[in-house]
Image (cartoon, rainbow, N blue to C red; front, top):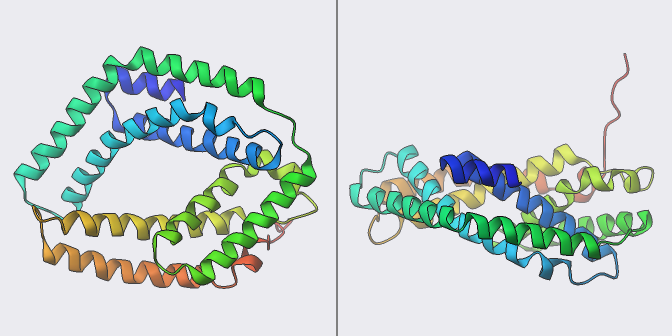
Length: 246
């Protein structure tokens, strides 16, 4: 994580910033697992300073994403593009001036979290995974294509991110189809990205109806794909085909 942060501070490369944020997401997912399966309840609070860095970096990433969308859909709006570029440049400059502070916050959070971590019983982890999968299955049948669907994706990603950590606990007690779950969360991610894009191009200063109509058509197909993938969720999530031996 620190390596990606250091690289971004040195070069301003957006891919490094993206990878830095992904590492924070994975750490947060791990802490969420530990907090949900042990008596420790303060882990997420200790991680809050790192989450603040994540959110600050997100402002830069959002502007970068907006520029990518502008290019993908061939939006011709110089004022909008200049504004987004300004957000990136000013955000990056401020981020760099606070670099030492960010490293210090990460180091402090790491020490405090490490001190609080407790050993978790395999049974508790397996039970947590089972309960979460059942919850997601219920959610998928009632949530529809609302913000709740995006919440389903977050819950799935917590399980996927932690699978290597939890694999030993799940062996023999709960089959876990990582490939299927990753495919489903990715599809939900595309749907949500399209919703964000639709909202962006619907803004009064852009109001590009042809682009909005195109995004809606694309998202109709994505929604059909999600509906098909989510059908019989629990069975698909807990069915893992054995590898064919040669």
